[in-house]
Amino acid sequence: MKNTALTDLHISLGAKMVPFAGFNMPVQYTGINDEHETVRNGVGVFDVSHMGEFILKGEKALDLIQKISSNDATKLYDGKVQYAYLPNENGGIVDDFLTYKLDDETYLLVVNASNIEKDWNWISQFNTFGVDMKDISDQTALLAIQGPKAAEALQSLTEIELASMEYYTFQKGKFAGVDNVIVSATGYTGAGGFEIYVANEDVKTVWDAIFTAGAPYGIKPIGLGARDTLRLEMGFCLYGNDIDDNTSPLEAGLGWVTKFTKDFVNSENLKAEKEAGIQKKLVGFEMIDRGIPRHDYEIVDADGNIIGRVTSGTQSPTLKKSVGLGYVNNAFTKEGTEIYINIRNQKVKAVIKKPPFVK
Image 1 (cartoon, rainbow, N blue to C red):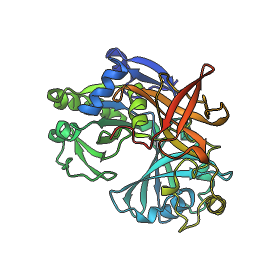
Image 2 (image 1 turned 60 degrees about the horizontal axis):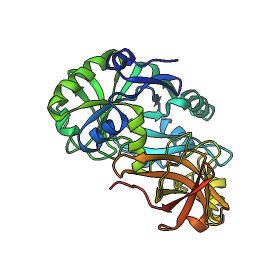
Image 3 (image 1 turned 30 degrees about the vertical axis):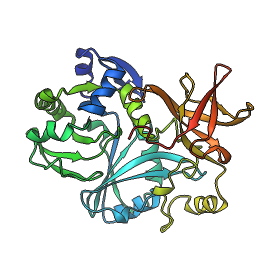
Image 4 (image 1 turned 180 degrees about the horizontal axis):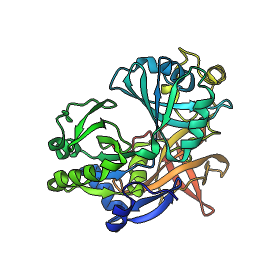
């Protein structure tokens, strides 16, 4: 199992460690509910250094990205971030990822930890453009400082004007005395905040500075457990749960990052699928009756007929009720439609609700 540059620190802080995507990662420190509330209402720090980072460099870097990405990367400007997915050739999704435009010939792609090798091999096979590709995942640490107090808590550490940064933009500069840090107004919690990319050898310095600066704001370390409950309250997809090699991006609601104004991997087939119309759709739902929906539980109608399956579910710490995501047949996708989750052979009532569940 791999460690991040901060694994020993997490252990010393009393984190409960679990294997995740081949890494030894902190799942919780003080408890998921407490950590969740910290991020929703204040500020917390995730070590997400397990994520993958690739640098694509060269005159044709944009051409390669346009080929492999579902989104239109010509819309990017220096300092802009874009969400997209890598379509496979069978109508599914290799991974979802972020593209950072550093300059006209240099791009940073950020991919999921479990897919680093898979994505690298996938992108490499389309690199007929002579693009210089570098996998910097093992040298790069990533901290996500999330919550409504993040900008205020971090401002003393940098000259970058954090509060005025637009969502999905980034700046490169000095942070906590360290040069060349990428500070990105992104995150996976819906609570606002930043993601900080820094070299492994500098991450402990940056971590310590963040916790000193954030102390008056009640800053805390946050584990992957709360990361999951936070993203689910927003209805954000998790690769491996809600989307994978066999799920249609159009059924998954990713049409908004599928740009048919250009040619990309499997674009013709996806266009035909869109024109033919999809048969099922990824929806959000809230439980009406008590019960926690889990990955792969059956979704049924009032008569017990299977109409879909749960992909993600949890007890929402904010709402004090269970929420989930799942694919259901088209006839059941309308907001307000009653459905049932098959939990231990019991039909447990739920209702279709459009995410985010927490505004």
